[in-house]
Length: 165
Image 1 (cartoon, one colour):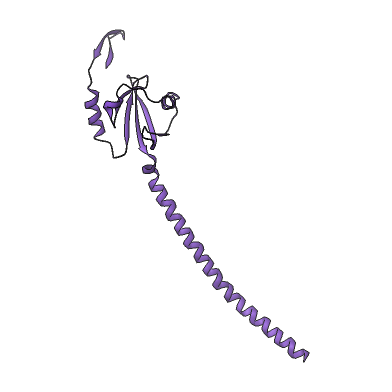
Image 2: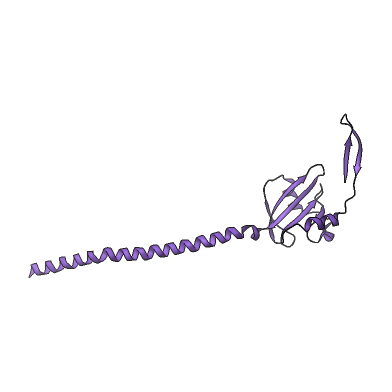
């Protein structure tokens, strides 16, 4: 890694070079990730510098062009895309200042949506219970209303038949 050094006038007067063991750094960062989360770091050409899974296999290799184009487009917010294994993740990324590196974190979509899906399931269950309760109450009310009406209709029919006789 190289960083320019400026003198008091702001003119470049030199550079600081630093070697980084990317595999060691990768392991340190990976140890802090929750299970299922993915991390990747890319250079300015979107070649892998670090990757939480199989870093030795990916180091220096390019990111798929369609994914690199998503990052290049400057889109904000999470990106929804499958990882290399085909598992859909929600990805968020940021550029590292002064390095042209891009750091990306991916969370499996089902991990993100699990709490929402649980709420939806509970809401549907409660909704169905309420509908069944409303049907039962409607049935009871219908019987309570129709019984006196039927009695009145029967009494009226009886009175009509006695009048005719």
